[in-house]
Length: 257
Ligand SMILES: [Zn+2]
Ligand SMILES: [Zn+2]
Image 1: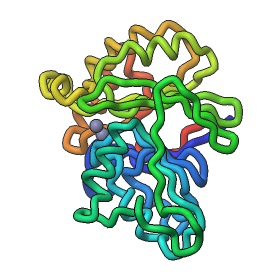
Image 2 (image 1 turned 180 degrees about the horizontal axis):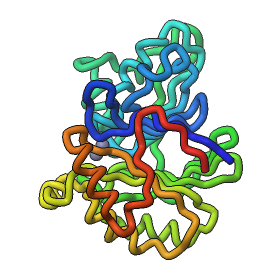
Image 3 (image 1 turned 45 degrees about the vertical axis):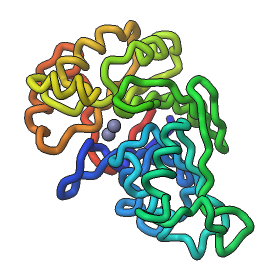
Image 4 (image 1 turned 30 degrees about the vertical axis):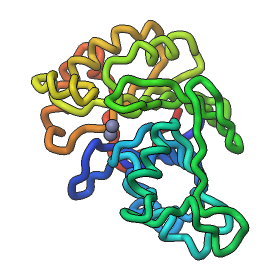
């Protein structure tokens, strides 16, 4: 069994509710919606972050992460993402207005720049220690990817934010080794129009989507609830034919796969 930890499981912030962040191992994370609060000083071990897209809820801790450990860091913080995601991060976050441009600032202890922006491409596998991460395109309002995570020989798929997405089921049906899926639900089914324009799933849409999964043995986990709608979403998911067996994620939860 391999494990990962969902450090932030929600699609919005509230008291004791934090946004998307997945700790893959002690030095690699996917998305930076919630790193410093749960990890504290251990967050200084993180030196690779793989982003799914440029939305604020997925990168809010990035500027604070590089700032918090700047004086003790001996290796750069590598930020991986689609070219569009990295362009937005540079233009709107590390732009010397909102936050210093750490791309241009050398580490105090080392020769390198303090952050390095590294473009990645769907379908190409990125290896980090004993991990393999393979991004795939999803269906969101901005260019966005999910990842197939291979850790210690086990595989899990994380879609991050997406609307209906045939690619998810195509990959899952073709790869018997994937034993868990983390997918999103954001709004109640009666808000289908908002879900469509913001390219998020509702319980009804996920129920339809899950009908495309043609094999057994995939544990389903759901994240990205908008905090306003938690009771309604839980109720709807529990009533859905294909969603009732799904596990609803909370901040800090460890997932075995
Ligand atoms: Zn999001
Ligand atoms: Zn998003």
